[in-house]
Length: 216
Image (tube, rainbow, N blue to C red; front, side, top):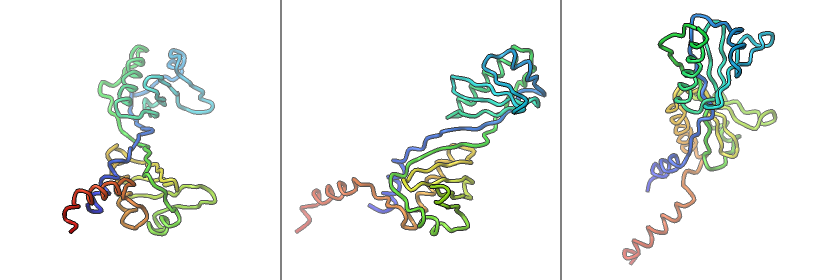
């Protein structure tokens, strides 16, 4: 069993959870936020504090910012389907208010935030030095996490000593997964992370038992 075998096995054990998706769209040429605020109970609009109107849904649990320009930002979704559902619900409500909503509502994913647990502790001081001080930001006196900027895919990783990580900046869920995989490989190649799972001893023991006849 090679190092790559255990590396792949460890990566498959890592569960990547999407915590938030930020997406943008455009509903119409313009929106009358005053009318929308008066017509929809779920709307929150305080133009003195913020120029946008906040529209919250309980299912899916999302919050969407609507602007007079017709543009909108949806946040809080944990999958692409919830983003689409949110946009469709709001579009239908706007049509009922007489808004000429675009027939083709294009959705652009702006940011995906995902979390994962590598399953082992990290020495962040060693990580900072090994990854290159020009690529990381680590000031433990101010913040316990280490910021690591990855060029491909272009994301920002937040690493903690516990082995937990946060990935932000991805435009596709696949990019977040790839970033975590690349990080694990890089840490392993630098000798900063042990990829052999605890139960690898069990596999070694089985190997020794089943090959016992060749011992002599």
